[in-house]
Length: 196
Image (cartoon, rainbow, N blue to C red; front, side, top):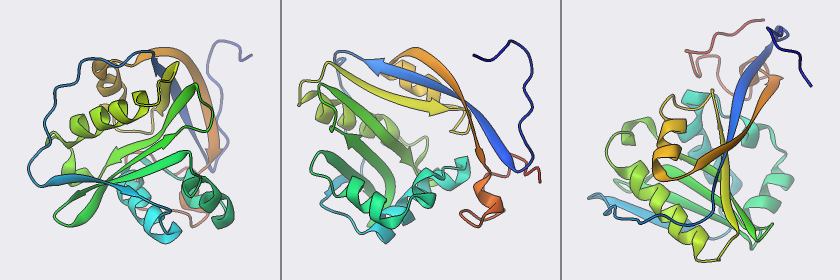
């Protein structure tokens, strides 16, 4: 257990406060699909296509986990019959990612959820999260859970709480900065300074 106070993060690393949230029953869902937006289930998506969408959504927030995962491991996850990958599409292009992991029923994890920057603030996020909730609760889970962190959009935590998720735990994650190892460009997430 960490002692209270400040804890130094080694040079070349990043740190984030992670908040875990859960939902035990689906709320009333009312959001209509925004014009020009569709959600498409990806049956065994190609790793390259998946990583392109992951990067489009996550690079501004320094998402890196799926960029450093070996291709064989990533393929095993996103091709698993109990992992559902969806792309939110607009203008004929993938502009959002939704990944739901049902491998540990009766619990279901919202593994990844996000939009390309140009889709934020247009109602697509609310539509996509409600799509996720409907899909997850169609399997009658005991709970639907996720985690978000201080590397995500500053609106993310409040968005999930407003949607009906309840925070239940926090953690601190420290990891090597992916921009220093070529996993993401050095220009990614400029709001998070690189400390070498």
